[in-house]
Picture 1 (cartoon, each protein chain N blue to C red):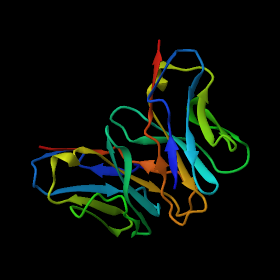
Picture 2 (cartoon, chains in turn orange, brown):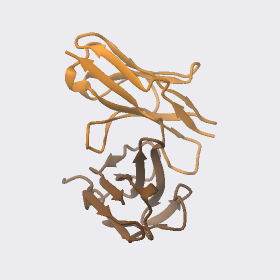
Picture 3 (spheres, helix red, strand yellow):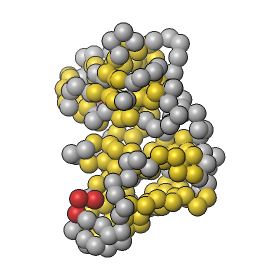
Picture 4 (cartoon, helix red, strand yellow):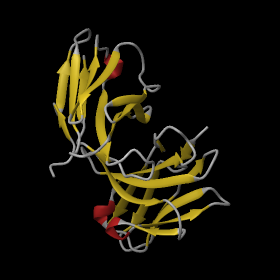
Length: 115
Length: 115
């Protein structure tokens, strides 16, 4: 079975401080991993993905994520948070060995950056 | 490109009525996905199509829900009869290819309220 866990429903951080949004996954094979962001009353927007290669992936708006196979994690990070980063963040996984191409999403983590 | 287009953006209806949600994917994209988002259940995949063919409809809640993709540029999600528990935001997403690396591009969503 494939699944994604985002252990924190909410993350609060002060502007200028580093932020981390956690994600762990479970797949039977090797994963493709994604982060999406959702702003209020909008659809999800792609941030970054891990397919293969370097475990540190850089994405949009200064975000990055590190794939850790031994810990089955793909935490999202940013060195210096902005108030405008406040949004709902979703981690998602695909099993690259699966014959079905569906994404499995986590429940989402609400990030609030305080000025 | 205009992105994924969904209509209507908001729908309010009474229990028992038929509801039809519409989606126009990004031109050239081969895969189309329908999702439902609620506070209780998060983001759920309802069904997805590859090259206009339904591939995985295991997420469709029950027979009241049906989806079609008559051509590469149009899809519908129909609920008949609608019930209050169907109230949610319904998202359509498309992706360029049928391999599993590709990013999904989400529409703005249809906010459905069934009274």
